[in-house]
Length: 453
Image (cartoon, rainbow, N blue to C red; front, side, top):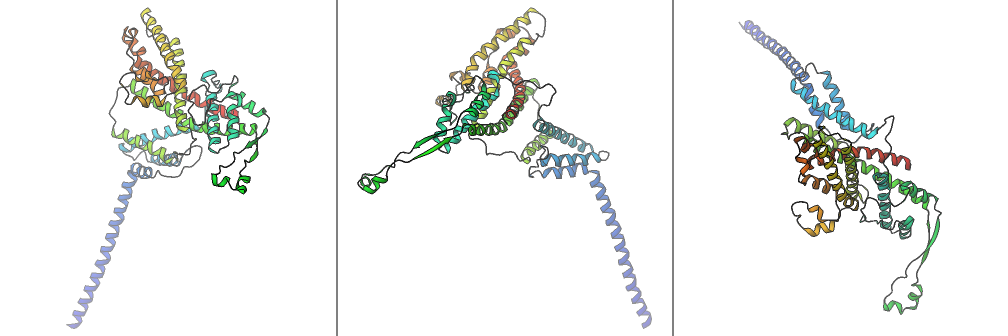
C-alpha cells in the first residue's frame, strides 16, 4: 500500500510537470502567432504609421546637400518607403502620400529655383534705367557701408565716401529712402571703376585737446600736457571698392528671400481673387502645418542681417511695385479686347489712360518713400484713401489705393469690361505682374553679384 502511494504521488508530479511543459509550448505558439499578426498589421499600415512617426522628427540641423535640408531628405526617404508598400496601403495612406508628394515637389522646386537659377539658352537681358535693381543694390551698399564706418567712428573715411562723386545725400541711418539715389551716368559699374582708379592718399587727423577744469588749468604740468594730438590716416579707394562688393553680396542674400516672399503673397492674392473662397479642410490644414514645420527644420531664421535690413525690405517692395506699374501699362496696351466691338476697344483705351494717370500720381510717391513721422502725426488713419495725405508711399499703399478705387464709367460697358478693367481686376493683375517682376529681379541680382566678383 505504501509502495502504491509512492508511485501514485510520483505519477502526479510527473503529470504536473508534463502539463506545465505543454502549457508553455502552447503559450509560446500563441505569442508567436500574436507577434506575427502584429507585424502583419504594422506592415499593412506601414505607409501611415512609419511616415507620421518620422515626419514628427523635424527639428534637425540643416544639411547643405545641394540645397536640400534634413527634413526634405527625410521626407524623400519616407516617400520611397511608402511607395514600396503601395499595394498594401489603405486609402487614407494614399491621401497622406499625395500630400507628402506635393510638399516634396514644392521643396524640390524651391531648391531648384535657389540652387539652379534660370539656365535658359537665351538669358533675358538685365533691366536698365530706373528699372535696374543693380543701381539700387549699390546705393544701399554705400549706405550700409556708411553705417559701418559711423559705428566704428572712422570719420575720415566716412566723410570721404560721402563726398565721392557727389553722393553726400546718402546717409548712414537710412533716412534717405528714395529709389534713385545712385546718381552716376554709368550706374554701379562706373562708380566701382572710379573707386578702383582713384589714387590713395593720406590725411592728417587733428584731435581736439582734452577739456580741463579751472583747477586743472592752474596746474602748469597738466596745462603743458593738454595739447591736441594728431595721426596719419591713409584712405585706399580700391579697398573700399572691395568692401562695397562684399556688402552687395550680403544684401543680395537678404533681398532674394524678400522677393520670393513678395511673389508668393501676390500669387496667393491673385488666386483668391480668381477662385471663390473655400473652407479649409482638415487635410489642407495638415499640409500647411507641415509646410511651416519644413521651413523651421531647414535652419532658416538667421537674425544677423545687415543694419538696414528692415528698411531695405520696404525699398525693394516699392521698387518692384514701380516696375510692375509700368509693365502693366505696356501689357494692357498690347492685349486685344475680349470682343472686337468698338465699345470694348474704347473701354480698353480708357482703362490704359486711367492706369497711366494712376501711375503718374503714385510713381513719385514710390520714388520718395513713406514719411513715417507724418503718418504718425495723423494718429488713427481716416477711412478712404488716407494714403493720399502723404507725399510718399509704401508698396502696400499703392495696391490698397487701387483696390479701393471706385469703378470708372468705362468699366460699366459690359460684364467682360468690368471683369477685365475694374480697379479690383487691375489690382489683381498688378500683383500678378509684380510676382513675375520679382522672379526676374532675382536673376538680375544674382547676375549683378557675379559681375561684381
